[in-house]
Length: 457
Image 1 (cartoon, rainbow, N blue to C red):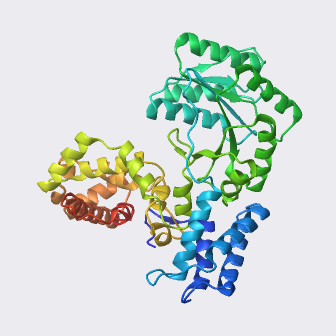
Image 2: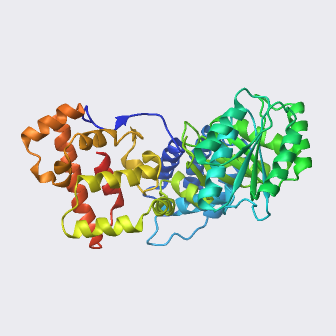
Image 3: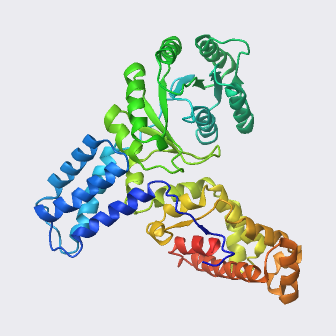
């Protein structure tokens, strides 16, 4: 790696990377085998079970999972075109989907107003999730949400929700001086009916551990407002502890679904793989970052694909469609066709990619890309240097990059605090991107990963 590269090595594993790597390694036992037998499948699944346990998956779930896979794999007629390791990957992929719920499950927001009660431990990310959910319902579902500040104990909890509400332009119902969360929740629903809000999202108090007072209180809120949806928010980084906590909450609240937060952190994946089996409730959302739009509907099939290194092109396309500007796209296409694509357009395309989310997460959605980028962390700030360089150019240079000669490069490097070598690297990225985009407009652009690799190099 070059010293000034935008990418920096980082050995922190994110979004099941460690689990994915080890699972794929375990399948190599079958490499070169002519067929699946009792002996080779037993050795493979012993490694798979070990990997699951290391990921903090419940022991019984790990055992049941590998027993089911073994039962389905033994005696499989492996077609000539399908290798044994490919067959076992297919079986494990199917079982991972089932383990995590099989299909995605939506929240119940059909009633007007729909009341959503959010529960969980302190520090699980409940309040932030409330803001993210309000943002999603407002901007992607066309709803008029009202946030209700029901956490009256944690210092600054009400203020935090108000700040989030202001950021996403969603009103927050509060009652300063009222320490009764049951009355606050009841009044929030009443105000929603009067003022025409169609969804009420109630934030509730958490504790550092499950305690009887907290459980009694949230049960009282539930009984008073009769929510249409109860969501349990859990920090996925807590692994098996998260699953145990979910069971306690479910026994008392009978919640409708689970929200896994901090999946962009150093998580081993055990919570996502265990929680569905333990509480028999679907995972409905996953939080994948700090920003308000970093909340995704949970799709078991897509997550299984990503765990097994198959990528998630469907989610990548959906992210792209959300940021797609048809008018801008037509304008860019015309410029590319006329060979007029310039550095202003290049900057515009970078901004579109940045809006799609965390760069490393986007890369993980491309099949095979995770393996290519092993031990390399693509920073969210990966494009900052590129932007700084372009902003140090004159309008004429951005419009007509061909005039940028040696003396201009020296001036630009001085103004941007970079080196001439970095200016040269940027110009190469720009030229490569221009060529690739021209190929894509001609119908030959089949390698999306190459485009992302070029832009981040």
